[in-house]
Amino acid sequence: MSVNIPIPQDRPVRVRVAPSPTGDPHVGTAYIALFNKAFAEKHGGRFVLRIEDTDQKRSTAESEQAIFDSLRWLGLDWHEGPDVGGPYGPYRQSERTEIYRAHAQRLVDEGRAYHCFATAEELAEMRETALAEGRRTAYDRRYRDLPREEVERRLAAGESHVIRLKMPLGGSTRVKDGLRGGIDIDNAELDDQILLKSDGFPTYHLANVVDDHLMEITHVIRAEEWIPSTPKHVLLYEAFGWQAPVFIHLPLLRNKDKTKISKRKNPVSLEYYRTTGYLPEAMLNFLGRMGWSMPDEAEKFDYAQMVEHFDFGRMSLGGPIFDLDKLDWLNGMYIRELEPEALVARLQSWLLGSGYLAEVAPLVRERIKRLGDFVPSTTFFFGPFDALPPEQLLPKKVEQADAYKAMKSVTDAIDAVATWDEASIEATLREQVEVTGLKLRDLFMIVRLAVTGQKATPPLFESMAVIGKARCQYRLREATHALKP
Ligand code: GLU
Image (cartoon, rainbow, N blue to C red; front, side):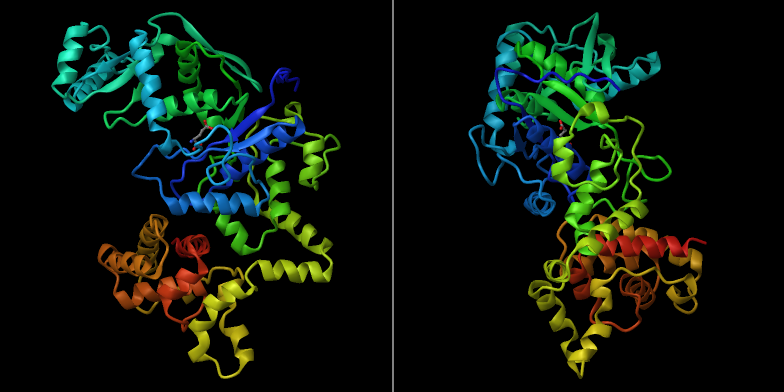
């Protein structure tokens, strides 16, 4: 494919990865970070980590920390970011709200944005009308041209409002993507986008554009799923009178069945890959092959080689398949290359180091008579294992269909646990007894067998806390799958 990504001559290349800290650190974040960083390094540029935590309800400090840890584990560290600082900070959006407010106000003052006082009822009514008329856009712009005095009066009365951008009423907007060329979007299909929400916080669009501009980002390299947002961003750059960065949308990672990668079909938490024992360099190699290839099509290459040959012209847009068999194969090759001492060091920095052992040891101390018993009694804290067959997972008198339904519910509930500790795990599983209608003893036994592969183990909730969320999720899902009637 011939692509021509412009590289500015008068200023450095600056790129960023901008994850939202709203859950477990995602393989997609590492994928995007890798391509940003490789591109920056190829061009002697800077790689920035920005935390997009404007969704106050869903963002957590734990999730942010997990993003830092897992990107560092992969070696994808950043030149500037919330924890390392830099000249364009702060790098956490929740610390920049004044900046967004001032920018939204600037557009209002210039007549390019306006206060909208629509109530929830009004919006619902507009949606219904739009639906009945078969229109794509719902908001009917009723507050767009309110007389200034009326706006002042409503603001003085403290009426709840948002700030919306005045989108062009006709014509089209051209969105250029470095890998795809230009796409023209009919402006009539775009609503007057909200910039500032009624709680005074910015929308993703406003914060993202303002930050990319102020942080002097030259290339926005992000996932394909943001293409639909890009026309809004382009119009915002125009409203501010700013030059837009170059947009490069990377293909979505896909499950084997070609659907968008999801935790129902593949583990997506980076924590899963670290604790299961994938080597960071194998992981990077695997991610580097997602849509990209080396000039000689070599399957095995390291990060330095990737940087050396990095070129978006070698990107293919057909959805890359996140194929775990391929990853296992690559990982095995990297392991075989390690000298014995190096392998030992890896094992120790994985789970056989004193940190993790110190968490496991108290759980089995009462149950072992000889130190050697430690090994057979703790295998499930370390190794991956195959899910048991249904006949071994099912307690007496429990129907397979009921167990399957219950485990689906348990898996979803466990996915939603935000703080992974003994108390939250216990509360979640006890609640599932109510929800699923299985007997406590039966449900806990299925969960125990799913997570440990054994009937008698150290206390379940504590064990799950130590094994970690990502591996528990995976094992629960595998067992659920095995129970499918
Ligand atoms: N916060 C967005 C995300 O979570 C950033 C998207 C972008 O790179 O613009 O992926």
